[in-house]
Amino acid sequence: MIRYIAFVLTLAFAGIALPALAQSEEEQSFEKELSYGINLNSNGGLIGGAFIRSAYTMSDNMLQFGALEVVEVKHPREQRFYSGETGDSYIRGKQNYLFVMRPQYGRELVLFRKAAESGVQVNAIGAVGPSLGFLVPYYVRYNYGQAGIPNDVRTEQYNPADHKDLARIQGSGGVFTGLGEASLNIGAHVKAGLSFEYGRYNESIAGVEVGVMLEMYTKELVIIPEASNNSRFTSVYLNIYYGRRK
Image 1 (tube, rainbow, N blue to C red):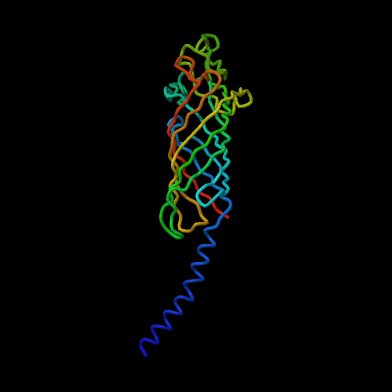
Image 2: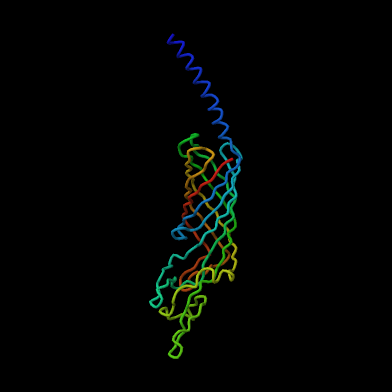
């Protein structure tokens, strides 16, 4: 009797488990991924920018993807100061912002695949693409006031020849002040990294990507004119992302 009950329970368990296993295998067959997130990098301060990526399955362990990344590149000598007159902040010596759009094409190789409902998946990532660097004028509010006119505040792009007295700078004009005067610079970039993907279910994507990037332009991009500026940038980056598969 006991053996009969055990046999029936085994068949019942198999009847439940086999369809579930088949369903799990079906859920692991995905063709597309869409993810987005924030970028932190060694050239961008606390939060460098944001990105969106669309990936397509090529084989069991290989994906190809297209992505768009938008970041701000900062000069390593940037320091924030405060006006003694107004208390507003500005970056001393800064003449331009540098914002970069990076369209990318890449491949993603699955090194270690996670289980259906737990674990960590590790992928190797490589990508290349053009870099569209926009130099946006950095404006400051500068007081030209003299004895007869004590307050003659003008909002102008910072120029070391015109704005020699730093005590007269009353703050920055804000990024939108010079946005319409941006100049485009063409370059290219390449990156390589590893992604560590978490998520309870295979159809959800959540994880981090760490790696290195090399970016080069055809000419020197001036951010702080009184410092050394570059046409080549290297950085270490961290992407935090979330998305879905289907």
